[in-house]
Image (cartoon, rainbow, N blue to C red; front, side, top):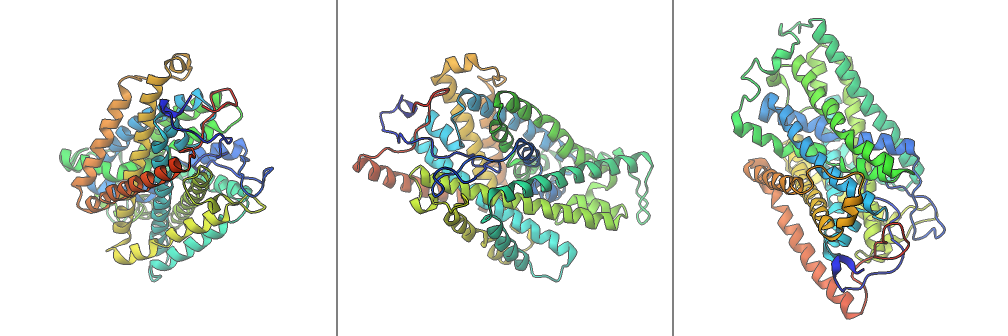
Length: 503
């Protein structure tokens, strides 16, 4: 069966990407050590990395800026976004379980939409992770400034980029352990913050300097839940969407386990609980302890809340935690970018040299190529008015591109239902409201783009998207003509479900 019902030829080599494009992809030395990646993370690694993927820089740093824009209504912002993302994940889950030969989002797009879609999704996903990595590096400079404000912002940016390059030149076992323990630190830190906040609420804590008491009424006592009206509430979606980038890795991580039909539904359905605890629960505690107008948008609200409550040492410790969280997120982004570049090269859409691995299974050339882009964090910081301004710029760019990826997952699902009705009927993990929900969420994504256009500090970053996609369109047309002229297939093949045959 040709891809997307088209007559274009497809590469008949085995699925070239024995990994996913997110943090859950794993490499080890395989039978062909110089051009092959092989999965190798244990279930212990996969589950902690999946949970940690729901907690990132957007929550630790970006939430302060969102609170300054929306006030307590940030809780509803996260609730609405989480509700919509849940449907994206259910669509992704049903597609993955319908054919376990799907290895990347590019595989899904090229099989269900067409070769061009796989090309666009793969390159955009690579670029998204590079941009996300830069955003995390920028966040790290903010945390370093809290410790020592005399250090120029570009110094930690450059040091972090160098450190990430060195880390990603190591065997993947090191990556797995690094991500496992730092995901554990993030989870424990947020749960500890929530527990501390609950204790302060029930003990009637009162700030010795301001006389303000910790109370849930702090959420609505200063202007209500929507102090900036509908306009302010809508602006919160600009940065709010960035906090959820990486949540799609929960589904793909579960799909990599030995029993995906059991683990994938469990992981996806738990997203609602994670959002309630880590996003809504944590920020409810933050704003109950610290009046929301006292939260500094330039700093992590988790750090400033503990400092406001008089726990200076704890605030310093939390700052170290969010710093390691940003380091973990940037490392995951770097790793994802290098493996996506490897996948593109194996699929024939990037220079072949990027598909070559060393004797430890590390695609060193893809690592060095991706590393070049990380150093852009330094000039972005120097050009911006502040760290949060630079972070807002970069995170807005990342948000636009990840919206495209999520949107393509939904478009793929619509195509999947149309082309493979039998698979949908037989699925034991059907997407709820499967006829209506994809269109509802796509409309919501259009609304998010509209809010990005409204914001003065997010309007310019969104202009990067049309330039990027126009460039990809030109490259795709040139590449397609070249392949057709030489009689070569347009892309790699995806095997039929449960078989070794190419689709």
